[in-house]
Image (cartoon, rainbow, N blue to C red; front, top):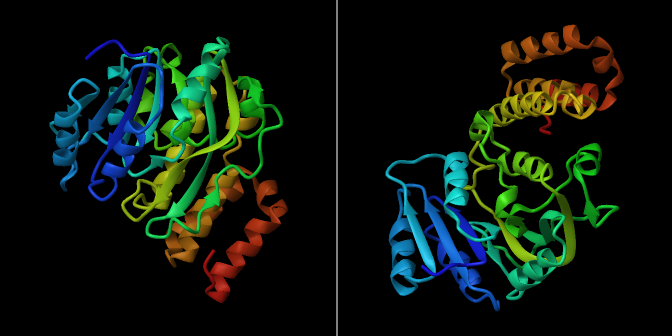
Length: 309
């Protein structure tokens, strides 16, 4: 495989219904620079691997296929696939999403070449429910106040959405070595954004270039909510420590996550766990409970009226 300026990192697992459109959206890119497509196939149970092999055979000089011998999980597969990319720049895409702007890579490459202080750039995208792509929604509804921003701005403004399927990063912005805790996090894309910003700025290009698919086999929809919440708590603590508590005013705000756990268990009528987390919240920060009117109203609603959140 010839040397490429741009690597497209695709991670995929059980995406037989979607992977063709994903790969095709990369192959149809109009780009003046050589690109490589590195696919991390995570031991799918369906025909995803066979489809990827088919594309590899058709494009042997452009596609590198990594066939995991067991299911590594999203985080490890993602990290390994990125590390296997050889390009100066890496574009990120998951096997159930796809690009809709055939000039996406060229625009981002041109921008990054003229902005050496930027570690990654991203664009807007549409989200849609699988099978209904006509009813799509814009993912970034509120654009950042600054189109080019640094780590302080990103963290102090709530680590706002930067659609992963639109990211275009410098390979040397990827953390090396990779922190151990990063491989265990659910919010890997969010955590990586923060680590990229240690190496440079980020830039928002005000265009819509991609389609984010929501479906029942997706990582978010198939993960138990308490697991997501606990993972978010652990990630916040790890990031807090990573930055020597410089951003404790952001990463230290965990009470709302505990409130969310409490509401979840009461909503599911798992009252023993619900009361455990309610008492935990009270003894951790009683003032936060009595002043959080939304939390109290929601807790009342799910407990006494049977309404779901």
